[in-house]
Image (cartoon, rainbow, N blue to C red; front, side, top):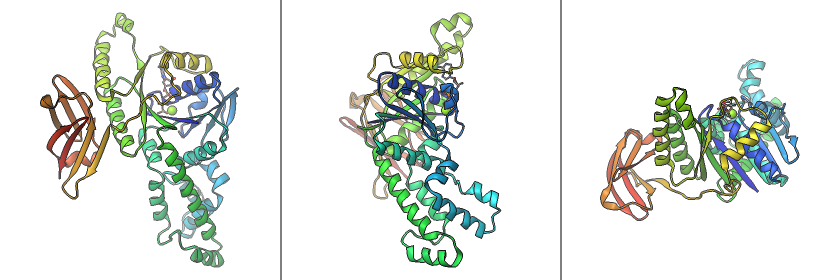
Amino acid sequence: MRILLFTGKGGVGKTTLSAATALKAAREGQRTLILSTDPAHSLSDALGQELSAEPQEVEPNLFAQEVDVYYSMQKHWGNIRQLMLATFRLQGVDQIVAEELSALPGMEEASAFLWLEEHYNSGQYDLIVIDSAPTGETLSLLSLPQATQSWLLKAFPGQRFAMKGFGAMVRGMTGIPLDHGLDEMERLFDKLQAIQKVMQDPGISSIRIVLNPERMVIREAMRALTYLQLYGYNVDAVLVNRVFPEAAGQGGFGQYLQTQARYLGEIEEAFAPLPIFQLPHQGQEVFGLPLLENIGQRLYGGAPFLQVLYQDKAFTIQERGGKGYEVKLKLPLAEEGKLKVQKFGDELMVSLGNQKRPVALPRFAHYLQLGPYRYEAPWLIIELAP
Ligand SMILES: Nc1ncnc2c1ncn2[C@@H]1O[C@H](COP(=O)(O)OP(=O)(O)OP(=O)(O)O)[C@@H](O)[C@H]1O
Ligand SMILES: [Mg+2]
């Protein structure tokens, strides 16, 4: 059983590449499900087929599903939904607005995670591919269940999961199924926690970061890598999409190609030793299975794309008992003498001779000062002071 999750900035090609990957796997005989968690639902466009909120067969071995938060809540978490609706109405919120509010931020992601849990445990698939929403939402998906738990607790002030007796009393008095809702919520968090463990198991789940050779896209991808490593998820490859071929230079794109070459170099610096795959710009939008099949071949070449392509924990950041933080960076080839570290805002720049490696820090590190650093093979250890 394998789970592959594709993430990246909006519009970089997550849907296209995840669909191409799923199709390739299916045609190689893997029973594959592709799950879209993006409310924009462009997966049906990419596959050239109408999809629904339940898995649907696209062709033999290939199933696709577009997660819908309202559908998911009605089907699986009716009691929670009722509880939320009733609570909002009690607070004087209009019925229609209450309907909308019952799908709170995080619920979209939670639904996706719960579907994943169901499909994972069904044992029906060899591979589940997740075509996710842009980076920010995906990070909140992956920081579930903690995030969801915190806002749900906020939504029901004073109600703790332990208060079953109280819940039953409220049901008796007001008809609000508080106890059933709380029970269901508890089961929901258990499931979220279980599937999060599966997502953090590097032997089962891999995250693939999709990007384009463009400045802002690269920066967002670097930050995503840092956060994913921080949360304990294994990123096993970087996919560079929409690379213009050299031949485009003849069409007056010479300047653009020069910039692109520089960005491709920066991608190498920032992500090596992660395997980096490239896909050329196709010169047209990519819709339908024939084009997707072609892309799957071009993207991975002969690489064993279903396997875990890379596995390592190359970055950690730890609190130093009130004395700031310690960043550890794995740099197997470094020679200590020539190492230099600089800090620019929330980014570190590690230089070794004329090689450079930019490292995105979590946002809170912006206001920390660069302290002393040392090399203890293979780790570069950097102190950050308040
Ligand atoms: N290599 C490529 N060459 C040409 N067009 C491409 C390529 N990759 C993707 N596209 C096109 O770019 C558009 C955006 O791609 P896609 O929908 O896969 O991105 P996305 O990252 O899923 O976007 P979103 O963040 O909105 O979900 C689509 O129209 C797609 O057909
Ligand atoms: Mg998409």
